Every structure is written in C-alpha cells, then in structure tokens.
Image 1 (cartoon, rainbow, N blue to C red):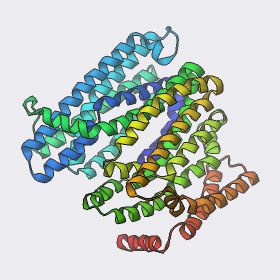
Image 2: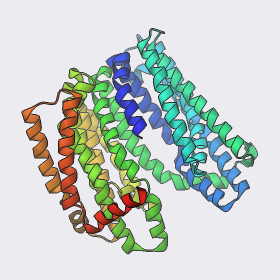
Image 3: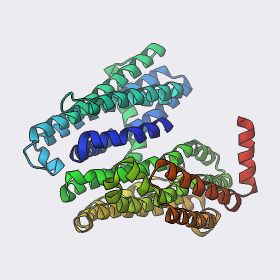
Image 4: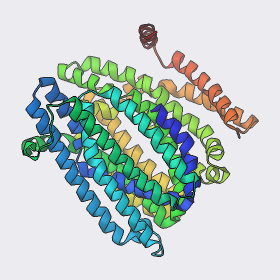
Length: 487
C-alpha cells in the first residue's frame, strides 16, 4: 500500500502532464469502463480465495483442482465477453467518450487494447485468488511491489520520450504487463504445486454454482459502487467535456489514497467477526465492534479532516495551480463522503462476516441507478460540483444504511454506538480544525514543506486529543501490550 501511495505521488503529475488533460480524461474513462466490466466475474474472485483455502485446509487435491479450474475457465469466459462488449463499443467510440468522430479510429484501437487487457486480467485474477487462498502473501506482496515499480518506470520513459502516441503506448504496455504478471503467477503455481493442473475436465458446475452464490452479493455491492463511481465520470465527459474529467478524477484519487490506511487496517476484522459469529459470542462481537471502530476512526476521520484543510494546497503544488483551483470544490464535496465512511469503517466487514450483507446489496442496487440519474441534471446545472454531490449522496445513503444494519445485527442501539465512538471525536476534530484554520490564515501552505509542517502540527494535536478523549484505559493498555509484543 505504501509503495502504491509513493508511486501515485510521483507518477500522477507525470501522467496528467504527459498525456494532457484531454488524453488523461480518455484514460480515466477507459480505466473506469474496464473497471465496471469487472462485474462480469460475478464475485468469483473473492469466492475463489475462500474455496481454495477450504480445499487446501482439508488436503483435498481433487477439490482444489475443481475449484481452481472452474474459476479459471469461468473468468476466462467472462474475459472474452468483456472483450466482445468493448469491441462493440469500438464501432461507435464517440458514444462512449462524448467526443466527435474525427479521432474515432484512435479511440477504437484504445477500446480494443483495453478489451484485450480485460481478457487477460480476469483469468489472471483467478490465479491471483489461488495464490491468496494458498496464503502466498509474501510472494504476492514482493512481486506486486516489483511490478508496480517496473510498470511506472516504463510509463515514465514513454511519457518523457517521443516514441509515438503516448496514450496508445501506455495502454499497450498495460496489457503487456498484465500478461507477463499472469504468466509469472501461473509458472509459480505449477512449479510449486505439481498436484495442480489445468484441465477442462476438472470444471464442476456444482462448484461454480456454489461460488457464484457466495460471491454474488459482494458482486452486487461492487457493481453498485462502480456504477456510481465509474459512470459519473462518463456523465462529466458528456456534459462538461472530456478535458474536465481530470479535475474530477484527481480529487477522487486523492480521497481513495487517504482511505487506503483505514481499509488496510480493517482487513483482519472479517475473520475475527466471522469467528465470533460462528461461536455465537455476541457480547464479544459488540466489544470488538466498538473498540475496532474507535481505532479505525482515528484514521478514517483524521485523513478527511486533513484533506479539507490541506487538500487544495496539496493539489496546487502537486499538479499545478489550475488543478487546485478547479478541483478544490469537488474535493471538499467528495471529502464529505469520506467523512461519512469514516463514521463506521467496519460496517461492511461485520455484515459480510455475519452473512447479513444481502440487505445492503439490495439497497445499494436500488440507490445506484437513482444516483446515476440524479448526477445528470446535477452535472448539467453545477458541473463538477454537481457530479461530486451525486457521488457523495450515494455514499452517504449506503453508509448510513450499513451503519443501521450493523447495529441491528449486534442488537446495539445507534445512539449507544455513536456515543461510544463518533461523539468522542467531536472535540479532537473541532480543536484540530481550529488549529488548521489558524495556521492556514497565518501562512497559506504553498510548498511541500509548509503543507507537511501544518499537517504535522494538526496531526499531533489530533492524535494527542484522540488518545486522551476517545480511547479508554483498556484501549490504551491494548496498544501498549501490542507495542511491547512487537518491540
């Protein structure tokens, strides 16, 4: 995660300025379109991890082969379907990008290249899921770090040298890199696990039905979020122009980077809640919920607060003054969605662990098309701010619904839950905002040093107040015991 953040910090300005606003907008549209095509996997990726781990735990090699081959060939079929869809779009690329037909041939090639990338990426995800299910985390993390650095180095060379159309070359390199990664994954698996084999005869309809049934609810949640997150970018392209996409994409990426630590820290909650669910220990589940929520809220609420006060200066220094000026308002609106997510950062993991996420999936499936339709008049009326508002309204509705559902599962009143978590943060958040306001009024941070200094000043106060006013004595004792065990 930290390597990804570092690479993004260095490469995002290179991508924006190397491609230009218009081509970067096209790139974001392509990435969004392919990302939405990811719903074709029907949740098979996450399901594969679970079923592979179960078969490995039982030592059932035939079952492991059935699970792997069923998932691999199903995702390969989904990849071909995705390629077919993008090939159809390639016939009328202007409809996708909201541009004229003068550069239709170029856009058609881009859609085909991304279609080929999708064809490779989906079966590659099956092999990656197999590695995750077999607990090959060290190999995966090291390999992904190396790949990310090599990919970025090649992209940097493409964008800083005159080898031809940079957007075509970067897109082609992305497909090549995906194919190379899939090849390395496959060689690693077959060399280290000779009991595994790739065979059509190992495809099992029963296994496919089980995995699709398990993963479908997660797939609906992913599809709903993607509908809003990805397709609003197309609304921006059609009503504000493809060159305006960059001014929406930059704050959106910044929000994602700020939420990264909270998501990573919350990863262990799913198996922990699942274990307590299996044991029927609801009392311990409530205790874990309240304590983990307080811990995660420190980052989940603190990062958006920093973006409110330092986000615009950072974008101005990071990307350029024009980007800070035009992306400032969308950033503030999108930051509101991050704050809402920070209120209950573990809700989804709790609901998945208790197998109660289906109700949220249904709600999200209804809310997503509404938000998408609402984004059209909002974007026409208010431009980028309207698009950001539509995305924020969707996130706010789904997160509030998840929060209510999580408290129902725990048989815990929302008032009690908020009193033990969010309410405790009001003083730290308010006092830190005053410090940020005073520091920014005294000296607008125009350099990385100034931004860092104000961030450290506000962050230190926020952490100090949070440790005293938010965490109780048991929370602090737990932190001390963890630190002693580690060091």
